[in-house]
Image (cartoon, rainbow, N blue to C red):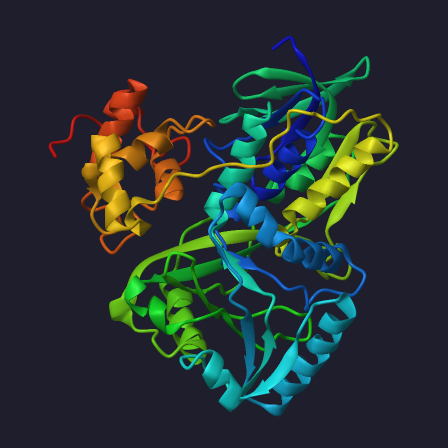
Length: 484
């Protein structure tokens, strides 16, 4: 590719997509390279979907500042980008005197960080807030909330795309060289040039950092496994229920409602060397049942519909093995590079504050001209299942595809599937449809609708069945024709 971008961003998770949207506010030619076939295929799409308050992070750290800042602005952001979001509050429960001391310690940290409204509550108040939560007492964080992490990342990327940013999926960065003040980036698919490069590569951020000339970072992959519970029990859990944190501020298995009515149990935490090891293990899942039942009293096998895992990219001090703060930097030894390393939880909450800090580093060295045409608003796919009967009738009259139900469990229509396929980012995978519409997320997990969605992908994208992939390159689903 001969054109020279002003900025190339490596990574299209929630932070890379937020950075792309923030740069789109200015007159710049911006591109995003992503090794996967869609946004949020790794850490950003494999988490609890919690908007954090910011009470467990060291006062003065980027994690604390960005979490508090990102939390405070999220009502406006969710409205602008049409992202499902609920400010539910959160309780951190305890059972012992040690737990109480932990809650008091982290309440003091939260107060110092500027987290609003933290209070220690007794069992009676805990029962009022959520009668299904375990614990003898708790710390209540009213500003915490839950959001759809898939839709949020998609929305940031779509809004960036609508404002002129180019996205290139299936482009894993293999090498970077700087010649005549231009970075030349080779991927498995093509070749790109840019004046500036921003590293938002998440789990691979240390590797990309080295390619850009900044060595010395070590990323630890901390894997966490989850159970997804059926919507039948979603009505019993009002807010995330976490156990009292350990001395390092880390949480064990918690129970979290989703904005769509399911409940997540997890994650646990295991250090892994393979950053693509998304398998689940019987031993870990057994542990989730034991620990999850302490948080939420409806953890029963009959409600389990799926399990999955995610991996957090923690920046580790080589000598002390301690987990370090987020890094957002620009260094003289790597000109025109902005380096984001170790962005883990609370990365979703912090995505936009991190994006603003990234653009501020660019602005320190170059004049930025505002893009007068920038539109911060994005409209998502209308959820047919949540509409009134009158509106459903009107939608069907306008488009008969609303009258054909593809996913019976979640009542997702053909019209919604077609809108997802023709998404402005260019969706080609089955999970791309799943993340945008909730099709295949119900009780049967795609048993009825998955092959029908594959058929629509074939028809609309003019592909063979053998070309359809579930999520990642190499995840082809069929070797030939399938009778439905």
